[in-house]
Image (cartoon, rainbow, N blue to C red; front, side, top):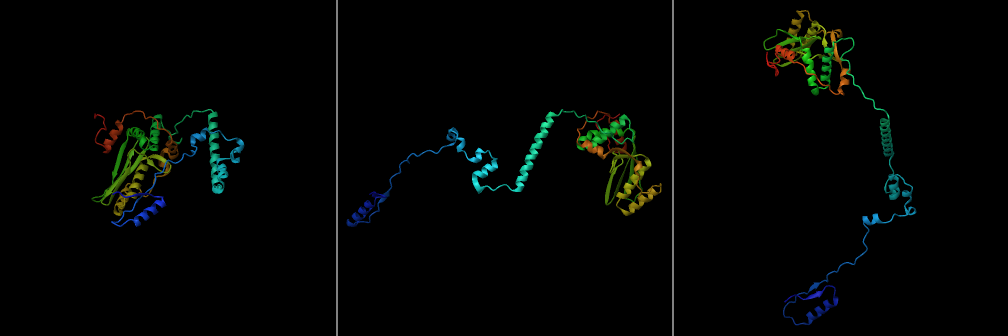
Length: 325
């Protein structure tokens, strides 16, 4: 038997069911009726709120109905502050200063752009700087080689071809000389110089059980606070090589042997060649000017002299792609 149903909001029906249940004879427990609530109908249609299209198609308000801060065409910050009242705090002095500086920079940029459009454009002709002071004279071919050296040193990896062009020129007729110092067993030290058509380079090599080092003395010129240079005489180059070797060698007994060996041929390892013994090729001021310039094209040239020099020095045992004679 299904459960009886009663309207949920009808109190009189609930009271009648209770009275009938109490008056009826008891045969078995009665089941409570199920309360039924009527289903809600659709809500009455109300006024639709205006959307964006309605606002766009609505006629504009008359000028006298607009707020005063819109009629007076105030700046956006002041207009928002007037509209929202005290919810927006006024700008701080720092914010005002930043806004003023930003406005001044923008006006200056606009003025500079307008002046650049009015002024005639003059083509800049870049002239290569002189490779060395006027006190040093070079032939046309030597000056071109020194320029390649300057470009190669100024531009590092991109300037590899220019440095190779410098080495190809300076290797012509270059002669390597090495002076080995008699050392104890397991120790090795030598001074090295290369005579070129523009001057001399200096360097050294050493090795002992605790350390080993070396550098210079081939085709790369020397460097100091003024720029890149070569030694003007063989004696100055040998003096510089001996001094570098003695300073860098870190074993005290070996340093004494180096001092004694060079003293036997009249060279004081503690002495340094003077500035007059240097032949400046390119100064650091010229190098700084080349940093921002575009690398010129390097003309093709023979590398035979460079390959022959490297073979004579033991730096390579092949012809670098060139067919052997």
